[in-house]
Image 1 (spheres, rainbow, N blue to C red):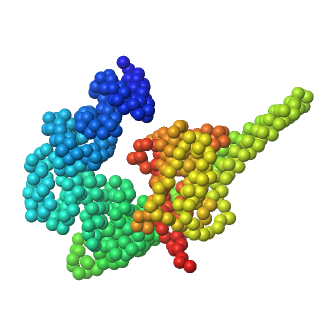
Image 2 (image 1 turned 180 degrees about the horizontal axis):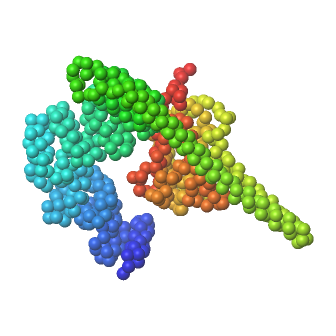
Image 3 (image 1 turned 180 degrees about the vertical axis):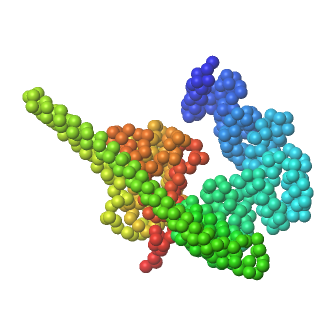
Length: 592
């Protein structure tokens, strides 16, 4: 039997079970579930369904046995471990203590018998703790890792330990609440994790350690930022740290070095300038720091600054040579210095020319897109008019055809108008600057589109941790959510759901916009914010011009915000919006 046919039959069985469950006929649903298990004994899916049915009946013992079988078959589909973890938490909160102990013992027995795949065993340990550790010596090491007195033994163990054992120790520390007696052990574990590229685990341990400290250790701050840079993802660091001008002011050179990369990635030119200026003060007497800053200046095309710093570095070298501490440096002749000046000027000219060419190419692409998008409806109108003129000259034109012509012209001009409207929020000079509530903007967009969402069979939800305000053009900002919601409506096929959550963490507004549509294909993910890129039909009248996300990106840029596609989101599409709460886009509330 082919896989496609098996999947179809399996789906049919599941639909039948679901209907019985919905109608409250649990016994019949359980019977059908056993039939499905007989038909597909190696599959883990129907064991999960069976466990859920028994759990609904409050037959906890039978439910645990079904989920144990589900666990044993997870090796081929480890992504389904979340379902087991969710059940285990529910089970331990509702079942009796004796049943919980028995279930845990059954799982451990299955692990020892090799019935649970190693990767699933590791996830059990990381998720639920040491109770699922079966290696007796590893259990001893976990306990000893809680004190610096045993650091030497911990190091000896880790020298030959597997990656999974290292992860087990780290997750043990993440769960512990006794920080203060094992400072050196934690620092050692963090360094080991980074060397073994266990960045996610190391970040969590760093984050927990920082959260437990009254005054965060600068070394840990630098480590957290460094690992974020290596992963090209600062999401976790932004949750743990307040990365703002205050951090720049109180940071040493090592942290400033990492902040340069952060502010460059988040396109925060103001704080990037501030960081480089502070580094310049540190470079006054240090040649290594000056050379590092020199390389940053080159990276960011700051050639005047780099040239001035180059001269300063030479002065430091000459001073050291005079003090007979750097005899290895050779004199540079006037000819060499003059030659460098010529090279500098040529490099600056080339970079300026390159930037000009880049801007012209971007403008050319934008105009090319406009020309193409405007050309289609104009061509349609011209063709229809010429055809009607010809028919009238021949005496075969009718008023109905003229009416059809008017309908076509109106439709095509409306299409042009829609496209121009998409751009209006970012080019319009008419705007009212005021303090407005972001939460209210989202709610108003859903209210305005509620009828259309209902017609499309789409439900929506909004979660808010706090009221968030910005200063700017409220109508313009609302276009962000109009475009995102309309995009989701066009993508969702049936049984749609759109959710928006908003919160503030350390002066950053976080907005998560999610839908359960088909998601965005990997080959398109890097193009979605480009103007005129679209996978939709532009003649449909419901978008497709490829301007929606381009407009969203530009509006958020006005607030120094960014929008990113969450590549790890698997249930549709999710966009993450981050907006810093600053003076230029935030007006303090008044008590008057």
